[in-house]
Image (cartoon, rainbow over all chains, first blue to last red; front, side):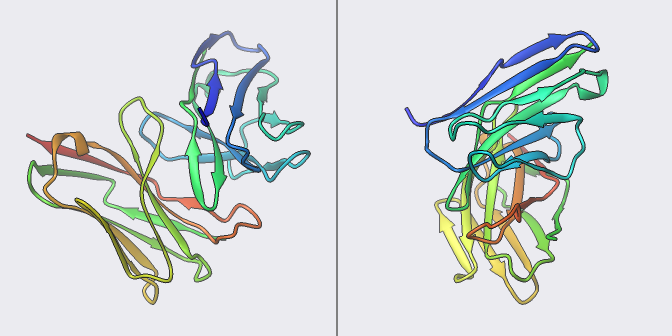
Length: 110
Length: 114
């Protein structure tokens, strides 16, 4: 089924650890996005990509990096997790304006 | 760049009443205006959208109106039901998007009381 997938769905990790949040979509969309969202609150864009080998920073400086080696895959990496990174991370992809969101990863940094 | 403001931030209505959420945008080039609904613990999902070539669009109990001159658009929910309780986000974008021109409003938490 064409969808957008995120793993892990929940993650508890200690300060200073390096983590990678995975995002994959099977819809063939070129444009992909990462948002940070505290539950029910505003969506903050942290990274986006227009296609393979394209990555851009968004409005929120989250001290993270992304890569886009394949169209369907857009992982987000935190080199050194901090308690301030505790939040929900939503991946999204776009087709003709409509933005499709993944189920999200809830991250807790202790 | 685009700036989207959304009001109110919270809205409480009785079941059966109507709910209206309003958004304003700043970039006159914006031509695509989607609305997303995010239920508790779930991902945002598109519920309705409107493009700048029309002034109103309706889908059962929900409707969206657009005033390009005033640069504002609104979501109208009639005959509200408890399952309409969620956070609603408006957005504005220039389509086709050559850069990241989609901006979301800050969200409205709608509560429908039975």
